[in-house]
Length: 519
Length: 74
Image 1 (cartoon, helix red, strand yellow):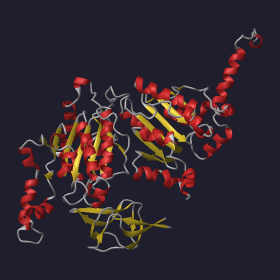
Image 2 (tube, rainbow over the protein chains, first blue to last red; image 1 turned 45 degrees about the horizontal axis):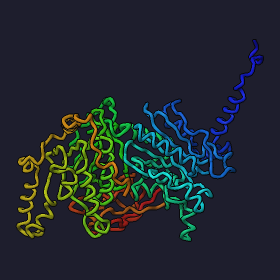
Image 3 (cartoon, each protein chain N blue to C red; image 1 turned 120 degrees about the vertical axis):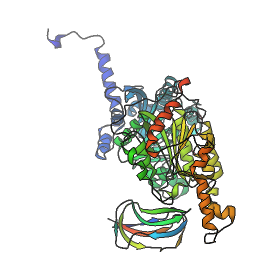
Image 4 (spheres, rainbow over the protein chains, first blue to last red; image 1 turned 135 degrees about the vertical axis):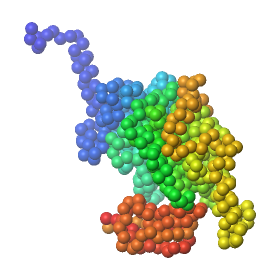
């Protein structure tokens, strides 16, 4: 029988209608808008999802949702401007919301708000990582205008901006992002920004109207601001693709949820090879600086170090890595910047990183070489005591294994903040370590009131230097081991194994799950 | 051609100037070294370039974020 002679099914018309609706919903804002984005080298919402998720795994939720407040918008709001669903990222189920800027500026509405709420609920209750791909003009207008608009559209979900860190959240800011798109970025555990994107409370147009002054969007919320000043951007990329790759990389270190240990990977060939020469990375003179990241990279599994907030609070380095295939969080002083003296931004950066690691069962390793906290009027104006104690409190609340290695200097309160004493599960030191309440050069002047140049100065300084060597500390068991630098990697792998959370299958207590998501 | 200022990231004093006017620096090269907190803290030419002017000399006290040299980049 000729196929054309096949009798029509009573459902054919229904299915034709279905396919037409699918085509309309997936057409986004139409060919012209999509072509303009393509010409600008920017992916559209569905391309972003396709790039992020393993091939063919995305299943959409709410494809036929449309604007519901204003009937006139129904036909021009495919998927209501936010594409949502579940896809596998690195083989793991993940909830994804991608803003479609070509549809009403991906503005927030009643329907797409329900989509986001559903995705978040499923992710948090079922243990799925959550990804937000942000690019939105903010609240949909005029829907939100007036007290009826406000009463109808806002405040109906008391948990809308609640973070209890049940599962890791990652966000990318991939265009202008105002309102809820910004809120989800800063609520996330990891936030990547593509250059050219803007993350702000409201648009530069609205801000200019409010203060009667023209504002450059880059100044208002560009990548430099958030990478260097606010610290909201963990990573900055040149392209959408790189931003999505960064999310995949970040999630690769994370468990799917807070009640499981992070995934394990095979150990790359060549890991540990640089350990033979690691002492060569440390300058011969104690007054010279160096980039601690070279030491970190030598110790962790080859090419596994993934630095976050590299441009913010640069006196400290924070990043995820693997040791023997297992996720670890690295906190290190970086003498290359300001000698590694800890400042307020570094305190915030380290505190938020401790919260991240503890919330997702990632052991923490601290590498110590700093002359103390930055002191002076500027530090006090920035609230240094509060920042230092937030950091200290967070460290005390950490329930995952924490190991500390003193490479060189460890002075004063910073000794405690960087895991000294019982503030780590194990403290090891290189023979190059020196520990005291303050640098011997200053201590001679403060303790003995002897100035450089006075006859007793050199002798007093030599005595102070001897007293600061690590051996005295080892003799009272305030460090558990003095190790050969080339054995650091092996030592840490072994100690991570010793301190593995066997009683709870690698899961910590998450005492900081409700800690603020920014400062 | 555009110019930018290399700045000291710390308060201290100039310990050693390690470049000369006219010298071409690669991104990340050291312009000079500031002594601060008994440490030698380098001032880095973030974007590299040709040294057009050196604004301080050995022993000059500098404050945080003070420009210490001007570089020209293409």
